[in-house]
Length: 299
Image 1: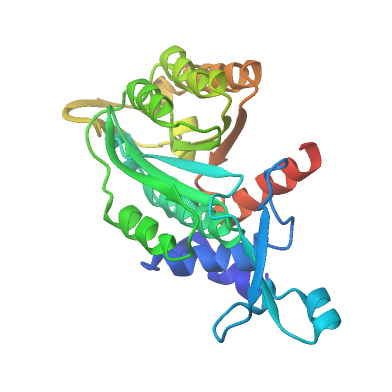
Image 2: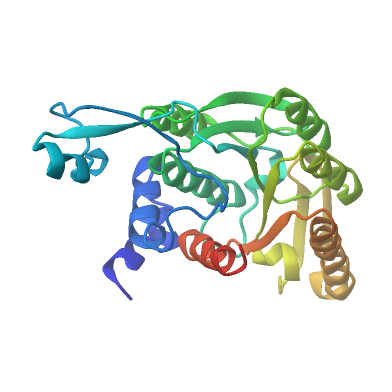
């Protein structure tokens, strides 16, 4: 295992509090070299040249212009990029679950959100952020400036799981707010009524947005592999508890979870929405890299 991969092991990441460091390690170590942008059909439009000034990035220098004029010029781009991305981060109480993985679903989601923000801002895309549960809690409009990363990371770092899950109203609300077609990225455990959630996701598609859904589940949520008598409680209603021997119900439980996952997989496919099921025991950098590689092949 490479040194970079070792640094990104979930057990190591769980001890890292700086989201910008996580994002940089993920993007620079694993993703940047795969493809300039995983979102085919979008590009940054060139606007004009201006003289080079100390502090400008060397990547923006037009070397062909230098060869002709023996002077350094920097390429300027339109402030409005062709891609506006909206990261939708689920902050409902169920996201706080952690049993079969080093990271909770929420911590896993925040790490993915940080990495995606870093990735897209680095390629000059505009990125916005929405924190939601049964309604929109926080909305940060998309910006393409590099300094915007700190705003996004601060908002992500301050977020805490809370309240119950009913995500469809938040999706419909945001869909009506967005005035221009863009990319919507959902990070959620999707523990809600699939029919209503899919209606919300289809609202984005109806308005012309591209949608990617990262479905995050802890491995124990999928297999209920607890050996001893276990007391379960609802993270969104802590007073509701159930004590049982999991082996007595795990077959029926697994069937129900498989049905839930299949509902989302089928519904997303029918709506031409990218759907990726992520196991939180898989290092998030690995999961994201696999997705981007697959998207590059099929995009």
